[in-house]
Image 1 (cartoon, rainbow, N blue to C red):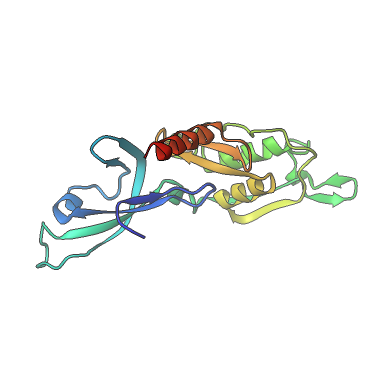
Image 2: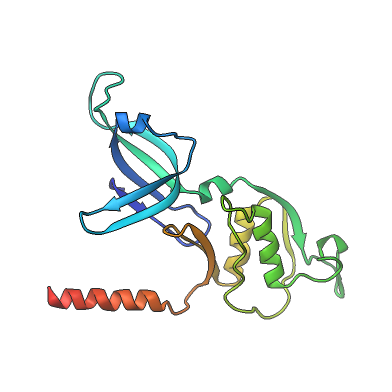
Length: 205
């Protein structure tokens, strides 16, 4: 809950952060636009791209409209803007023990797992301001998905539900501002390398 932080979870829940700035700097921002957030410690620089301002409030005393008054501002990544996109669809819902309702098929053929995830992805949108290009699943699931109904639902929640069934999750890289799908529990060689470097630094300290 401290200022000048940003927490980025896996999944469809947006990453959120809070930072401090002066009123005059807040007034200079277009709060309807997306903005980059840069953390800089004097040596290292990290840029989180395309964040949306959520809310803000004054945290130091001052007269009304004081330009030097300090404000905190809450921000979120652009998954926040995708939460309300609707979906009204179902996938491979059985009409009998041997068949499916035609309206829930993919041009008369049962949806595969990857096709269903791709369709949900496209429903949310493949533009650069939505999810971007569908990256595919990180593995080929067994079997045929059945009984997925998302009538009157939200597309991002539907995507999260299906990915969870596959032990996968949506992942946003805020540095490159790109989405991917990762398999939960899979080996993360990049993280292992960074942890090994961190352990060596601790030993030196």
